[in-house]
Image 1 (cartoon, helix red, strand yellow):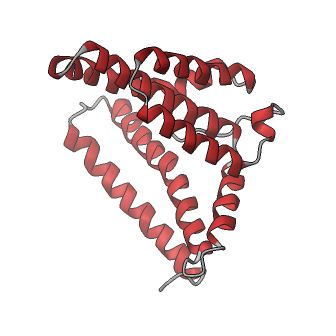
Image 2: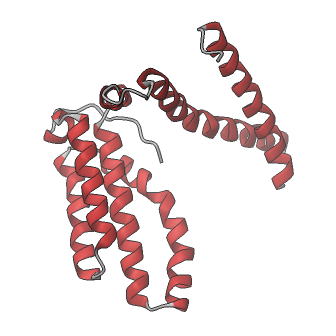
Length: 196
């Protein structure tokens, strides 16, 4: 779900990352407490309207939101079975709105700018090492697409060999390659003096 920033000059692109992050937090909090599906549908429509406002490619924005649809395909019927369809619709709209807002945020904000903003805010707290927290955040953000690439490479290799897709046959090489990557990250950090 971590998207890459799409270059642009829209109002959302020009807005400071700290302001956008604060607005995202407030908006998602408001959406989380809303109960009426009608108001949630309005919130979702407004979140969708941010995509053309920011001049983002519709296909790329849809790709950011699409993975959550698989979750909702299972969660909505289960929620309706144990509750009501109204509650299930409210839950689905709440999740779709939050994910859409997060996608717009990540597509209009460079990761470097966001990390700089977080570090600047953390420097005001004397007992937090802002540089190390920034490094951890940067590594976390970098590792998500890296892990996805490892899984994709393993699946491609299995397909090329005509092998089946059992969970163990996929999980073992993914885990081994992930551990090797983690070791390489660790060695790089030790070489730069982050060994404590």
